[in-house]
Length: 156
Ligand SMILES: Cc1cc2nc3c(=O)[nH]c(=O)nc-3n(C[C@H](O)[C@H](O)[C@H](O)COP(=O)(O)O)c2cc1C
Image 1 (tube, rainbow, N blue to C red):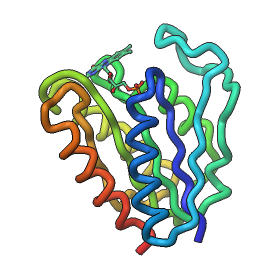
Image 2 (image 1 turned 135 degrees about the horizontal axis):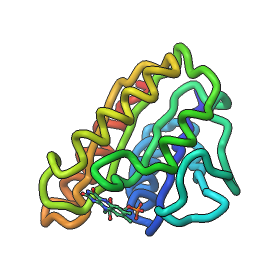
Image 3 (image 1 turned 60 degrees about the vertical axis):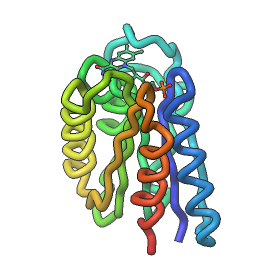
């Protein structure tokens, strides 16, 4: 079973969480690939639909973990546009993780996760686990460990 970790990261925070989750899955003996979503112009002002320099094919994997930052109390426009353009993910098990910087999850994390989950479900995927990491919190390391444990359980 191949696990794809597909991540968009503008400043590197979400990417570093993706790497930690990957370590966890690799330690459990899973075959994992970490792929980045890269917009042609990596600027939060760019609106959807946008061009991509890299848009990994999610259908290559049995299990998918998607990661993104929160932007403007929402899922980043990049991840939204990327997922919207994916073909059906019917029957696939999916995990979603977010990083954000404002102090409380209700300042963006929760609503962004609702959108994230909704977009995956719209593609037919089954969202088995979600995790939110508050990058500016003292609990950041704890959040990352929790995210790695929760998402690391996907795939058995
Ligand atoms: C354009 C923009 C909008 C943002 N909006 C929010 C927000 O609404 N809530 C929040 O908690 N953090 C917000 N942030 C902070 C990012 O979510 C946070 O720094 C995240 O960890 C960045 O991840 P990255 O390094 O993978 O890009 C915003 C950052 C940017 C660049």
